[in-house]
Image (tube, rainbow, N blue to C red; front, side):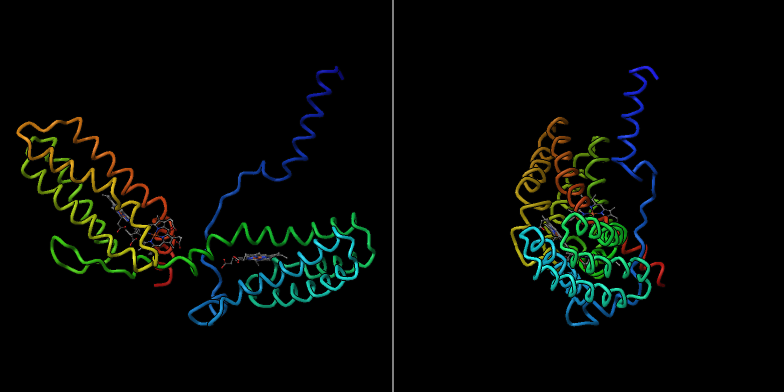
Length: 285
Ligand code: HEC
Ligand code: HEC
Ligand code: HEC
């Protein structure tokens, strides 16, 4: 082998060690969590029992790690025993998830702590830790979407323009209608209709504020998406449209601010979850 070839070869070997499986493109599927998890979360269970169980396994595992680092082997052994118990207990809670657990690896880990050989302990911990990581990677987003993210589909908003009580999604179509009316009529030079669209858009974006408190207790969130910057842009649309010769530069700049700072940013933070939930709801019915 030439020197250059050797170093390229060494580099390839190194790369393949550093990224063991990342080189396979995997699809990420957000599958609805198993039914039996329901009983471990509100409203069926008073406490979020699964989360509490996670604190139990991670608390006892951390007990091992901290004590091994401090050479406090007596307490490390105690924690290791409790960890293996908690881990096995957890493996029985959700039958659909039992294959994520490796109870033998957890027991072996607890045994390894008794050798008081830190190197061996880290290695044994690695095989248990992998089981935690695999399940988190595959399930956390789905579990958060199901049990932590309130459903927008259950919220109604009262429309200040038509005075109807509308589902959140329907209300969004009304907002879209006003937004489009402002833009299309402006392009057509029909400024009076564009002004009506802009006025309705402002009322409807302001009307959305009443929905925030269905999920948020902190009013300061209203500085975003429906806050002062967006209100200023909504007002500037109306000012421009009441002029004899509206300035397209000013009009489109305000449209851009509304589209990005209101619609797009709110969708980026709130809508992905609603989309996932909608797919699951359609599955169920
Ligand atoms: C079979 C799946 C599964 C396994 C195995 C698993 N977890 Fe979890 N874990 C979860 C899920 C799902 C969540 C998210 C729960 C939530 O936020 O509602 C979670 C959350 C956590 C949390 C955060 C809790 C919080 O307050 O948000 C910690 C810490 C944790 N797990 C530690 C561990 C450790 C340590 C192990 C391994 C010893 C482990 N988990 C094994 C599924 C698993
Ligand atoms: C369907 C429920 C729901 C509605 C309605 C809702 N939000 Fe949220 N929003 C959430 C959740 C859940 C989060 C994630 C973090 C949390 O719980 O605060 C979040 C996060 C946010 C964040 C990120 C910062 C933070 O405080 O968490 C902002 C800003 C925000 N929302 C603004 C708003 C505004 C403004 C409205 C009303 C116009 C609104 N939200 C309506 C559920 C909602
Ligand atoms: C405060 C947050 C927020 C703001 C601001 C917002 N949206 Fe939405 N939008 C949502 C959420 C959440 C959904 C998902 C609703 C659902 O699935 O029920 C949504 C859904 C939609 C939908 C799809 C409706 C459906 O039935 O699936 C459209 C279209 C839409 N928004 C347009 C807009 C436009 C245009 C603007 C700006 C002029 C805007 N939205 C501003 C949060 C927001």
